[in-house]
Image (cartoon, rainbow, N blue to C red):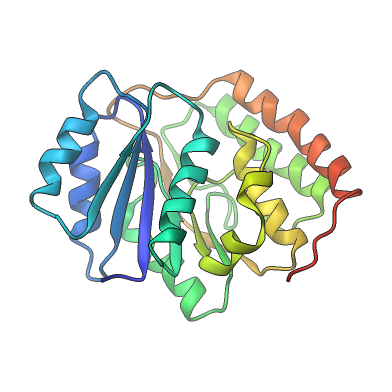
Length: 244
């Protein structure tokens, strides 16, 4: 049994899914994996099920009908992880933009440095992004600057999707109260944890743009994040963040 589970949402990731699963399984520390597949027509789920015969105690899959959004996939995964008594729950992309070898660094930030939320950060030590067009790097970087200014969070990579949560964070923040389903979901999760007084710590990583498969990112996703953060800040004035 492991105390840690990595949640990986997938939609049409047949080029990457087996390699990413094997890369996590090769780590010295044991991580379990939960795949949340939104009805990928390319057979991603079938590949995962085949690998379950090889990793029956470590690899799990939840299949959903159609694309329901990144946020709902993670919320679904978080609830499953809590039900199955994991102490540390991780978010990670399937496309190797997040290096599985950095998972132990996020784990150490929680277990050794006392972080409640460990964030794999592209911007905590300069700009560490590989193979992105300059325009996209600038858009992402300044979006995080903007979010930091509006929210008051001392987090340089507010839109990061490579994150480790202590169990208590997910139990406390009220997963059913998370509003955003797309890109702004990442901001809302960090902001809510911050408002509850949890310790957020950034861990420098190098983010590498996907080589295989098709990116799901577009300008409207950034738009949601930019306008959504104003809604988050406004709602926070009328919300209570007291821990039970």
